[in-house]
Structure formats: C-alpha cells, structure tokens
Image (cartoon, each protein chain N blue to C red):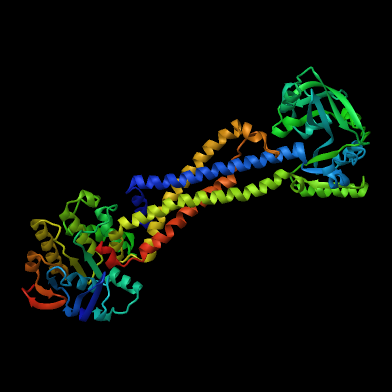
Length: 409
Length: 228
C-alpha cells in the first residue's frame, strides 16, 4: 500500500470535513477565476474603447495640440490628412486607420447649455477601422458621406429633446478660433458602449465636420491599428515615415502612453492580484484547520506509524498528499465552476448600467468577462500550491511528535 | 540480547516530578516469554518504551544485540524500531483505512521489502494467526480478538528480535485474551521470537515463563516461573 493510496483513503475518512475543505478551496478558485475573467473582459473592453474612441492603438496628432491640450487648441492640426492616409496605408504594419475631426460643441435647449463632442469620420474608412461600427446604431442609420447628417448618442439626444428626423444646431469654435454655428439632420441614435460618449458624442461625416470647423484638408488626429497587435512596431514605423516624409511637428503616441484606461488597467491588475491573494489565504486557512484537526484526531495513529518505523519525512508526505488531494479536488471544482459561470457571461455580459454612468473612463456599461485559459490554468495551480503549502507546517509538526507522547493520547 | 543497565527515567507532570524508573537493570535473552508486571505507575510501560526505542533513558544504558542505543540519533532509533522491534498495543492501534492484509504488509513496506515477498510473508502470517479469509476486512469489521491477532501479525511479519506487548489483553474478554496469549506462546515456541509483556493481568503473569515485578520504578522480583 503506497502512501498516496493511504492518503486517498484518509480523505474519505471524514467526508464532511474533506468536503468543507474542498468547498473552501473551490470557492476561492471560483472567485479568482471569475475575477480574472472580469479583469480580462475589462482589459479587452478598455482596449476596444480606447482604440475606437480615444487614442487608437497609435495616434498621430499635432505636437502642439498635445502640449496645450488643456486649452483645446483646435488650430493645431494634422495637415492634408488624405495624402497622409494614403502614405500610411502603404505601411505593412497598418491594418486600418481613421482620420478624425473633433468638434467641441454646445447646443442650447431653452436656457440650458448642453455640451457635446462631434466626431467627424470618414465612414468608408471607419467601416474598416471599426468592424462593429453598425452595432452602435440603436435607431435610424449612420450618416451618409457628403451630407450634413449626424447620429447622436442616446443620452445626448434625450438631453437635446431630439429624435430621428429632427435637426439640431450646435455652436463651435473653428480652426481659426472664430465661432460658428451649424445644423445637422439627425438620422440615427447611437448606443455607444461608453456612458460618457452616450452623453456627449455625435458622429458626422468628416467632410461636413471639416467644413464646419474650417479645417480645409486637415484633421484633428489620425488613429491607427496594427496588423498584428505589435503596437510599438507600428509606432516606430509611423514615426519613421513622418520623420522622412513629414508633415513635421507631429506627435506619434501609443495607447499605452496616453490612454487613461491603460493606466487604470495597470493599477487594477495589481489590485486584483492582491484580492486574489486574500481569497487564496482565506481558502488556505480552512486547509490549515483541517490538517490540524486531522493530525489532532490521528495523534495515536501517528505514534503507531512512528513506532513501526515510519520516518518523519514519510509522515509529512502522508499529510501533504492528503492536502494535495483536497487541493486538487477544490481547485479543479472551483476553476471548472468559475469557467462554467464565466463562459455564458462572455456572451450575455454583466450590465453595470447606472453604476457606470458617472464613471469618467472608457469603460463600457455592459462588461463581458473573458475566460483567459492561461490565467485559469494558473489559478488552478496557484490554489493547489496554496492548499499544499498550507498543510506543510502542521504536517511537519506532526512528524516531530515523539512516538511515546503520541501513543499516550 | 537486550541488556538494560541502571536505567533512570523521570517525567515532569505539571509541577510534579515523577520518577518512573529508579535504576532498573534487566537482561532479556533470546526466545524469552517475559512478563513485566506491576501496579499502575510502577514504570512497566516506561521500561517497555525505553526497550522499544520510542523513549529514551535519562541515565543508564540499553543495548540491543550488543549495540548501545543511548545517544542514538532519532533516525537511528527509527531504523532500530523498523527492523528489530515489533509492537502490540493495548488498543490494537490498527490503521482504520487499511485492511487486515494492508496493516500487516505495511510493516514490511516500510522496510522496503519487495512486493512479491510482502505478499507471501503477510499471507503466511495471517494464516498463522488464524485470519485466513479475513485479509480484506478493515479493522472496523473485525472483533477485538481478531484485531489483536492482526496486531500480532503486524508485529511479527518483519521477523523482529523482540515483540513488546503493552497490556495486550486489557481490552479483550478473558477467553479472547487467553487465545491471544496462546497464539503468542505458540509463536514464541515455534519461531523463537522473544516476547515481553507489560501487564497487571494475572492471566498474562500466569502465562509468562519469566515474571519480573516492578514497584515504584524498581525491580521488586525477577523469577523464572516455568521452562519452555
């Protein structure tokens, strides 16, 4: 009879207690699996939103705009964006690009001033840049190229009291820093994933935006996505192209440098790992307790085995193996249950709705956890390792028991 | 074979110092059937534990097979117990998750005996103690007498030079107790294995060929009762 066999039988000796230990480890592993799936979902969501609505994977802007961004200096532009786009498209690292004109705008409803942000897009290029662009259309349609049509964020439309078929007039500041008013025909309402965009954004054709802002051929910025996710390689290629062929004075930045969401992710990653550690520690206390109770109950047995000539190391291995079995069962059950919960949520999402309304970050109101197999497998091994380590100290204490003392119990 | 010379042992029980052995000397030869008798607290279990290398003397010496065990490392004591000493306990002390066969086989497995030899020796011994057909039963499915037979088989299977039995009949009715004693006596005669009992049971004393009486940690009398 091998020690592993004895340990396995011992696991079933007090079924209820073993079940309790397995459950504790399982709950910890389940929570961590879900937590990591949610973190992975947040990671994907922040990246998706940052790439589509904030910074792109790589962004070209006028360096002076970046420098004085807090003043919203719309006069600092990316000149001749069409010619630049043609040259950028030749780069093998570029999968898609999106020149944009940002319009700081206000509208008035009675005495109320409503702030808004217009985004002028080349809808032909945008369909390539955002493959799921059509998904934002909640009502109506996307604006047609060469028109003064616009699609408004749902909340913005509500604030403005506008619907499909209405017209809305906005006041803005042009590139020449003069005021201008323009009127758009509302052809659609958009459900932007990010609450802040839903509250403020409207999309319109880039030609119309350029006209309203008196931009001539310039754009506010050009956003780019790479073919293979190698952001730094794309950034280097774009920088090289700009330094060789111009225009001069441009700033090329990767999303990791400028996205607020990315910084949040870095922080969340650390925070979630600390939370995970606490979950593991919590689960491990049950294993420590179980092992200690087991050893207390089997003190005489330890004495007998020791009297028979079982070495301390073998005794440690016996209890260690028992804890390992409990750890394997708990970790496996927890990870599988976590995966079983996370996979459907991957499709249905978790609607944080109202809680996200006031969050000033590019985080969607509906978050879709993403089960990352690597972190799930790691969670299994982490919880197993914690369960095993938790049993080590009491098992060592058992091995140090004097047989004469143990037999006296 | 085993020589105990002027062994002292003192325990501290709370604030009380208990002098369990106060200079015990004893020689145990091969194939002896010896009973160490005495009232509770006389030091008989302590003496048995020291001979069995699960406890150590404060002073004096113990030699097993001519080799002194005083001052031996913990590891060496484990090796001596594993190879040379068999134990039979008052409460049988079988491992409840193991079958009768496995309980006996374990003593050999700990010595690293090959599997085929373990099977042969274990089955032979279980037959010898009258447990044929009960190999696969766990202790909970065996009577007290049967459990003690398993314990005897477990103690004997590794061919120890000595079997130490601490109150082996204390948890058995007199009939079963006697059958266990007969079994051990038979084995003693057939195999020449040395048995040392600690007891205050008159029946065990009557069975012993040599009776050593302990009182307050000292040997009061040492007499050969009958010859083999």
